[in-house]
View 1 (tube, rainbow, N blue to C red):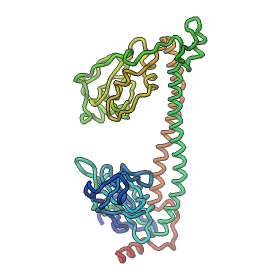
View 2: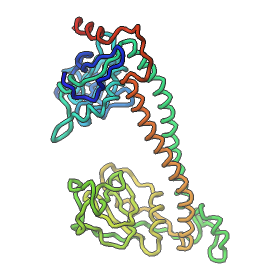
View 3: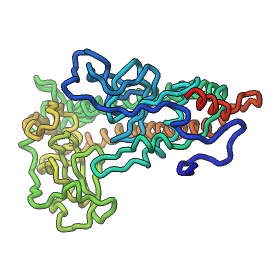
View 4: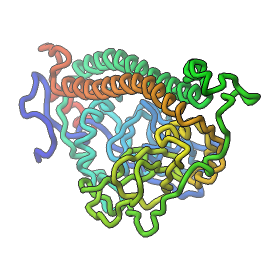
Length: 418
């Protein structure tokens, strides 16, 4: 047998080294003609790839009346192209497209055992993917993927223990994610309070000789002016100074700021592309609505960014905070800067702007600390999950029983019946 996978040569008692095709039936998906698809629920649910996957079970988006390949309830789906490796369980008899394979355990091997096994080795499976347009693995690569197989009764103990541990871990992760949502709401409430003048209400009342504490008919402080974003900004020209994403580097002298979810998209050494302006600036994602405060030298990404500066009447950091409180319409991948320009914004007096920033950063720094803790705990939970899977499939999660029928006998039974 060709030793190509990351499996141990020190086998636990009763375990054997084998391949996926020796313990399961593998059904490679095949897409039927598009004329047989529908979104009306006619025929079998039709699954094509990772996009339809959930935590354990996929959700159908299409159905097929003339399927070419069929998975049965309980089969394990594995994505075999773009991306390679993610898994789910087939909830009912379904049509399988070419982006998936269905794996059916033989002679009593449980679906959950195969699911957890594949999740343990997801990275190794993914590493075997090739392709110039998108990553994919062949059916043969999947079939010959090597695994360690425990005795059948030990498989059941492993699955039972994993279910208990992962139920506890999932509950902890759910609580962390709920805390993240609550933290986002807290951030929005703080920005809203700042935007409406509530964060500095007591400060204004203590400066009555300079500022009138009353609010006007709109509910905002009397001495705040109302205007549009377009009236308080300057646009920074990037003509001829944008870098296409295909030219990003992993390292370089200058970071590239684009409209992606990551603050820094990549790097470059091309100093001729450096944005020439007085810092700080705001980089706005015209398509994504991303808002980034940049106070260091950078290069702009080529696709859909606007670089703007607040005028002297507005502290740049406060302007950044305030435009985050503006609700913009969601037009998908259309352009959104036109809506930002027309959006209403309030202009407090400059002395009060300084006080608002101080209050905002005091509150938001606490939120940042909590966010960092939550992120660290989520990362730890992810690592713990993989550590548990590693223990499970190396014979260290549950005790071995010398009375268990060896896995070699199970393999012989599979060969006899097939």
